[in-house]
Length: 165
Length: 432
Ligand code: FES
Ligand SMILES: [Fe+2]
Image 1: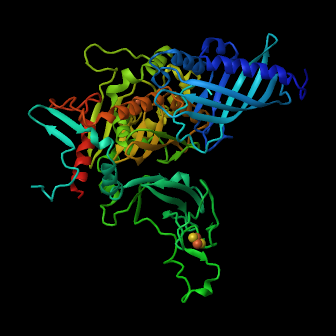
Image 2: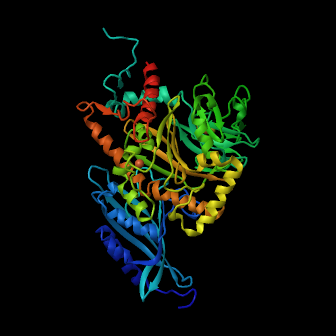
């Protein structure tokens, strides 16, 4: 596949999004990790600088693969108090688009709505869009860079981002 | 007979020197009357943090924020001077500047179109001839706050015209702010772009306690401790110290209600203490930062700056955590049971791209709404707040750790927390 061509179909990308949403909503985090490339990263920019660069901007989350693996260890630990018992989440992923390839990276875009419920807390709704970069590993699409950008002006009543967006 | 001279807020903090106990009434975390009292006794008479000079680089630069419950424009005028103006139109009150931040040639009120200069003075009033006299441009400008002063670029306002000056107010806290700013070769620190703003459904005073409470580290932050261990940081407990972490830390009273922890560092510092987590390639760079520090400050002072972690509370609601990164954290009560937190990262202006990236990476491991620690603090605070629903039945919180000691309080004692509460009690009991 050469520069600028579409290296994945929308249906293929949608399948990946839907599989991911299912794994995350069911807290199958080890299985979710298998969707990541070896050098994957995960970003949630700050609400006031959604286009910021994590090297000079304070993000909400900026994980390299090492910290992302540790994040999963934390999320599975009952001592992860913010997510124990785990939140009930339900993700709706829409408006999926596939961008023109950049080398072996495939930019993909989608909108998301994530409903999050915890006992004795008000429901919280995380709305935003994804700007991911995928790459093919042994023929399958894998996340190389996951970027979840929230629409809220500030986190405010959303509180912590203690689960995976 | 009811003692009419007594404040309604009397007896909320109980100190018993024979039993060596210190208790705080849980009512102070739920009562709307206490909340209203605090607005007057604390937020209308203490020096309250507004922002940092580095946030306003150029003439006309502004930030709008809520400070002590008021809408404020923090702005640098064309004369270079930093001001805090009340963001409410002198005509009939509309919020004049509705943007979060920017650079303004003028502020334009969208209601009837009055305009103001960045220094606050009136620029123009549509149909000015309808007034008996022309509008006094200075007198009718955006109202400046009664007092605005800074210490080493940290700007504070005071709504009490008669308050003591900021430096006197800060008392021993100045020495700890110095330890932060001395990390920069030029003494200039800057707020890094990107703001973390989140609400906690808990009384604001719980975050004061939590920010300096090292007793909670092992239980609340077990997953973070685990992460540090997995990353090769030595987290084993020394047998002799009786402490929960490998620190011989102290909790200190800095006067006027300010307090700090003061702990030997074991988890790395961007200025300047290398740990394996930073990676081998960072070693030489951290060594170079250390060398600059030693040349500038001498061996002893450099060690003071680089080898200690300090979580500082400037009474009542500013926290500067100088640890694995520096965070400036400000929080306001929205009601008795809810607060709004704003947090920034602070770094030396001279930092290279790699150094800045390292600082921010270290910040996010522990701090912030997506960090490995802060979300669990939020959960702990909200959980305590939920427990206070039974404040009539279980009336008191206990803060007696270390009460029997005559010598220095350690960081896992509660001596420094008591500093806050004594000041709180003194100011509240003066209220009627
Ligand atoms: S309220 Fe601002 S111009 Fe009237
Ligand atoms: Fe904590």
